Every structure is written in structure tokens, then in C-alpha cells.
Image (cartoon, rainbow, N blue to C red):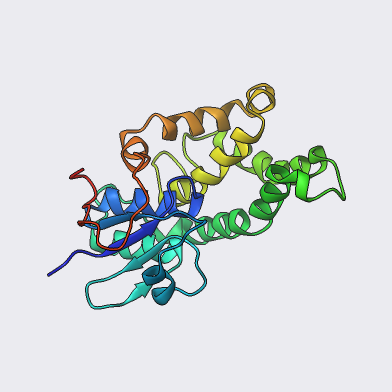
Length: 215
């Protein structure tokens, strides 16, 4: 039986969180790095919308949303209890919804401010800060967003906060978010993150399978 196939792009925050969950859970999968300027036709046949990640299971089932990939991985194996317990599940879902909604929209306008000339980048950054302030407040009393342990929500949000921090690194390092910076650095220093960020050449039809972790 063949392994699931993951179409991914190394810097995409949605793909990063999907790869982290799959690697954490121990799911064996074939990794196919995608050039977003030259997407492989087979990926587009599985997922015509053309965004990553796309996970194709052995039976042909296609999972094309990163949160669904995370759920698939955690159902397979969740050794450190990433999935939020019932008492904080709603909080976690709310944070992910905010992150994937207005924060991501503000982040995109901030990162690509040259395409959004209606306002200066500082305006878009200020919009995104509404969410960052909420995260900083949560981290004042605990090392992770929902308590003393790392959960799914931390991994789901981390790649987007990383992307925000990289837009203007000097500004972020001086901003009033010391706990958020520490939380971010913890993820950046993790072996899991370093494993999933290993660069691969773009996959081409006919390439031999590259199983994650065996390269």
C-alpha cells in the first residue's frame, strides 16, 4: 500500500502547520514540493483550486484544507495531547477562526502593502496588532495559548505569527510583545519545525517517491 501524498510549499503557513501535524503524528507520507508558478497538473486534478496543502490518501480521498490535515494526523496519533480538551476546545476554535480570518487578511495587506495603496503599511500592521495583543495577554499567565501545554491551536497559529514577524523584523523585535516573541522563538527552535522546513526541489512527474524523514 502506498503512502499518502502531500503537495506542499515550504514557506506557506497553511502547509507548514499541516506538515508539522503530520510529522508529529508519525504518519508516513510522500512529500511533493510544489512550485506555485508551475503547479503540477496531477495536483490540480485532485484539487482544482490550486492551493496547498493537498493531501491525497491511499484510497484516493483528497484533503485540501490544512485544518482537516491536522485533524487527520491527530486522529492517527496524538502522543502529547495536542487536541484541546473539551473545556478549552471552543476557545481554541475561536482563536483559529480569528487567525484564519481577520488576522490573515490584515497580515496579507501588511506583507503586500505595495499592492494595497489605499493605506500605509502601518495601518494594516495596526489592524493585525489587535489579534497580537490578545495573544500577548493570554501568554502573560501561561507559556502556551491555552495553558501550560502546547496544543493544536499553538501550532495552527505559529506559522502566521512567524510570517508577520518577518515582514519587519526590526519593528517586531522592539514591539511590546515579549511573551509572544518568546512563544514564537520556542517554535522556531523546535526540532519539529526544523524538520518540516528542510527545502526540497520542486517535484516533477516521474520523480521517485520522497518519503518525509527518509531524505
